[in-house]
Image (tube, rainbow, N blue to C red; front, side):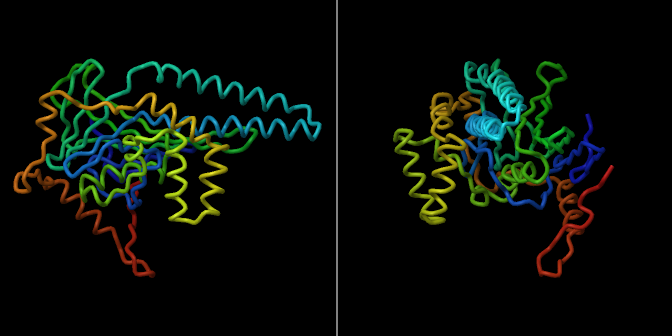
Length: 323
């Protein structure tokens, strides 16, 4: 199956798809692991997990409080439609629990491992089957869809990463798809940039907000207090108590999210097949895989579209081929 070139945009009235790879040229966005998808990271490989339970719990809790608050306000104002808001919140909560509950019962999914020395990615299926995908053949698409309702325009989006098995044509063992509910558009590109930048630049160029949470030895509340102290060093106690304290504790319920995440992801699932362990070992620099001529040509074309901006920084012109 062929895909549009990286940098291509397909637009309709209510939908937009940005094709980011193959080939994995820069998107122009700064890497941002907003969902905590980076599970492990070292100089040789990086593990990406699609089980973003913490972000899901925070979003569901926030939406629940939002509907409760809106309904309570309407009731206080003696507006009879308040029960409709509460009913909508209850329906949304039931739908969220319908998808979350099975995920909590199933075993934690295996991560996808990206090896920058070999320029390959490794996929392990639930049945134990695995395969290696050349980095330059990984597919990435940022989708964004909009809908209209009485409340106005609602926009949702995801980042999809596809890893096709190059050694088989069996439909049940040919494709592997990762999906991240990150809003689409620029947030999806920033999430993809975490992977692309790691593979093309190195581990130090990607700042992960979440890998340390998998090695915590303290309890949930003690870890929360440590996070507050660390945040206070960066932005002061006022902003820390306002955002990480009030909003984090009451609006997003980080303690519940941390508890469920620990129950599900401690310890982290690992790729322990002997072939994958051998594949994951570091290589001397002279044995590292090199970018292909096709990829280097795509990078050269990308750089050719970059022109100096009046502020002295470079910008991409016509980077999006609209189809």
